[in-house]
Every structure is written in structure tokens, then in C-alpha cells.
Image 1: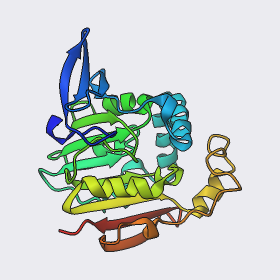
Image 2: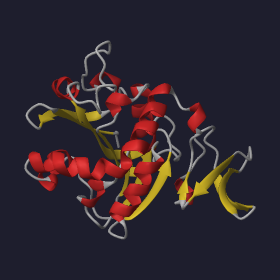
Image 3: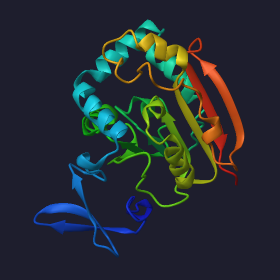
Image 4: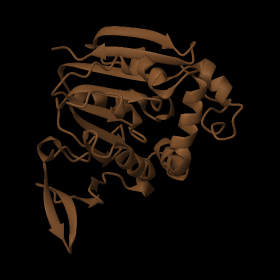
Amino acid sequence: MLSLLRSPVNGERLELTERAGETHLVGTDSGTSFPVRDGIPVFIDPGRLNAANEKSRIYYDILSPFYQLTQSVYYNLKGGEEQSRNEYLKYVEVENGDSVLEVSIGNGVNIKYLPANAEYFGVDVSWGQLRRCRQNIGADRNIDLFQAEAEHLPFCDEAFNVVFNVASINYFENKKKAIDEMFRVAKPGARMMIADETEKAAHAHNKLPLFRGFFNSSRDPISPPIDLLPSDATEIRLSEIRQGLYYCLRFRKPA
């Protein structure tokens, strides 16, 4: 795992160091230090996140104790969680031995429906969600978790066979930067997928108190970020699922 990590500040290599009984990842050149908290490297400073990420961090930290319950109720109304999640997870195409990154992993339930014989990595800005993710997955999958921003991923170039993001890119302040980062850390030929709510879903969520603040009336209409993909992305495919409430955008990094 350490060989894949890089400072999200300047891209330098990191090494593990013990300081006053605490574990840190330290930049080999600058000495910049990132704490490791309960086994999870922390690559964010909550006071310095952009506005959208700080809003998401606070929101999901508060919601995390109840998030699994709300998701279970939602998916039961949609015909079952496994069936509903597989509508987009079938496009992730994880193979045995792959290194797989989920950006904005949340409570980690997507990983439970993917093949066991792969190496998983998850990034999220919410500490509460990362804790729930570790509890949900347990020993079922080989996974490493990181508190970091999608716009500043703490990994080296060309690290992962599969990179995907579900139900969060609509909230990002800099969607282009996040997509470029996902593309950067993907290996040549990597399979990539972005899925999120459509404008139709946003209108439905505006009626719910918990979501109203995320989908305000002054925003631009939601559209799949095809125009934000790198110019050399290949095999671009777009589908709508869940009766048009979700889009699923798939593409590859050229080999």
C-alpha cells in the first residue's frame, strides 16, 4: 500500500514514521506530515476544504450513524439492495487480482457486491462514513481506506485497474479536477465509471428536507459530465438506470 501513496500536496513519496507514539506519513523531501488515525491516513485539513467538500464532510459525519438504515429502507422500496446496486455495479467489471479504487466510498456497501479476489481502496472526506465503511466491510474484503478529497487523490500515477465513483460527483465543486485525478491514478487500459442522480432525481430530492440544501434552485441543471472527460478517454458509454433517476457513464483510459 505504501508504494502507491503520494502526497496530495506535491506528489512526493511518503514514508511511515512514529512521532510521540503516533503514526504519521511524512513526505520524503518536504517533511510534510499526515496523521494515521485508527489505521486510516488523514490527508485533509477540515478547516481548508473547499466549500462543497466541507459541506459534504459535515453532512455525512452527522448522517453516518443513520445512513445505512436510510439506504436499506430506500433500496427495499426499489426491490432490494443487491438488485438495485447491481444496476450500476455490473459496469465496474472487477476481475480477480485487480486493484480497485472507489472515490467517495461512503459506507462501503458497494464493495460488498464486488468480487472478493481483488484489492480495494476507498477515499472519502467524511470520517464518520469511513468508520462505518470499515465496520460494514470487516474482513470480507481486502481494503485500505483514506480520508482525502477526490480533487487531490493521495496516490501515484497509474495505480489502479478500476476506478469508479457513485452518487457524489454532483456535489463536487470542481468536477473536472476530480475526473482528471481519477484518470491520473488509473492504469493504462483501466475501466472507469461515474454514476449519479439525474435532474429528474434532483427534483424529487428537493421535496425531502435532508437533501434540499444540496439541490438548490439557483444551480445549473444536472447533466452527465461527458464534456469533462479527458480528450483521450475511450469507449465512452452512457446509460440511464432506475427509470431515469440515475445516469451511468463508463469509459476507459487508453492502453
